[in-house]
Length: 273
Figure 1: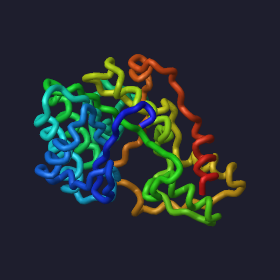
Figure 2: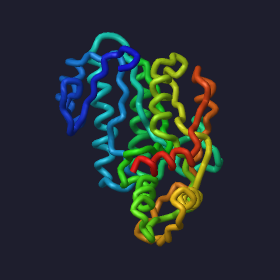
Figure 3: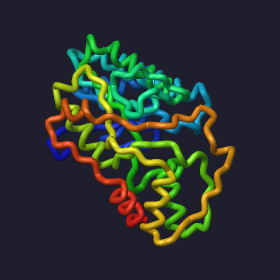
Figure 4: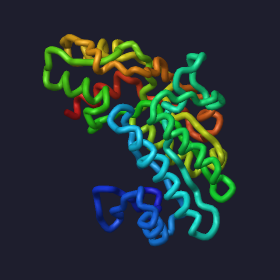
C-alpha cells in the first residue's frame, strides 16, 4: 500500500472488499478469483505451516495442491507474471554441514518439509512462463504469534509467571528472524530482478537453542521457569540444526543486511503482552 500498489488478498476465513474468500484447494474457485483480480505479482504464503499439527495428506492438499492451483490460474492470464513462493528451511532436513546454504540437496524429514519441497519443484517448473522466486523462510517470530509455535508458547508462560513448562528437545539449533524484517526482505526481493529464478534463504545467520532462549527469557522476566521435558513432545524425525547462510541474500539484495538481535525481539514480544 505504501508504495502505491493495489493489494488484494485471498483467505479461507476472511472476506472484504480487498480480500477474497476462497479455498485454494478448489481449482475452479481459485481460477475465478485470479481472473477477477488479474494480478501482476503473486506472493504465495498460504498453506499448512505446522510440522506436527496435520495428518499426512493435509500437507499435500494444503501446500502442493494449492500451489498447483494458483500457478494454473496464473497461466490463464496474458503474459509473464511475478510469482514469489514462501517455502521453508524444513526442506533441508539434517545435513552434514552446520550452515545451510541454497546449493545443498534438500533432505526433508517431515511431511511439511517434503510438501514444501514439492511446491518448490512445481514453482521451478513454472519458470518458463513466469518470473519465479522461492524464499526459504527460517523460524519467523514476533508479537501476536500463535502459541502453537514454540517461542510464542515460551513468551506466554513467562508472561503468566508460570512456574514450569512442558517442552520437547531443548538443544536443537534454530535461526530466528523477526516478522517485520522478513516482510521487508520479501518485498525488496519481489521487485529485485536479480532474484528471478532463484532460491534464497531468509534468515539471520545466527543460531540459538531453546536452552539458550530460556536463559535470555529468565533474564528478561527476572525469574527462572522449570522445564519438564516430555517424551510425547519429542519429534521422532528431529532436525537438529537449522542455521541458515545469508551469503546469497547479501549478494542478491541491494539493501544493507540487518537482523534484529534475538534479545531485542524477545523483549518486544514480552512487552506486547
